[in-house]
Length: 312
Image (cartoon, rainbow, N blue to C red):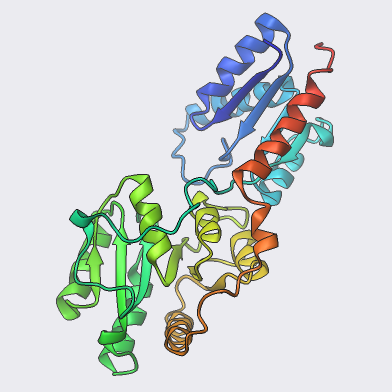
């Protein structure tokens, strides 16, 4: 064994890495794909939080390299561990797998296909779940307003939701379907490859983040969306994800709870679809840097550098 590599979550992987480091003295790379003690989605009990902070400190102190997935998360580690050398920390983003997106599929599997026909409708697809404040509420409110006031023709648009949803989201989706039964399809959870097929068939991909999401939150879904080459309607707070969509010329990013902005974005995208100008606007060179092949090369460089490290 030349090197130890651990990735999280679960964060117990890093505790195993720490143990192996102490047993073998080999260089250790600790990869934090999500924040640990700084994670707003983790509900730390009062007695557990100090313990997690202690374990996080020990892992970061003893690791030879600490990797995280965005610049704000990198800067957060710098602030919280100023005693550690800055060059111990490195950013390697999430990415998309080119093999998954190598060919645009001809359609959804037969048991998931329905009345929607991509050639006839502007199809907005969300591949993911609604949870912990990530909600379709404001998007559905915006869409309901456009349809009810006749600003959007129901014959022009289809909404596809793929994933698992909590009770509150299911209720809002059901209410919308009752008012506009021909507009929405809820396909439920699909295996990954089928979800990728649905992304590739979409005219517009929907991305939701709640307003409390940190500016460094870069969901894996964003990179798969970028890799598909399809336009994105991102309803998310200002931050790295919104900036990335704009840099990639990959669509529109609006505030997640601003119904008026969402309505304007939907109308712009549908109009572009009608005019045949919706696709083909992305910056392919910018997006290619997020391929798993390119990112694996960055990780390999870290490994190769550390193989020469003298364990202390």
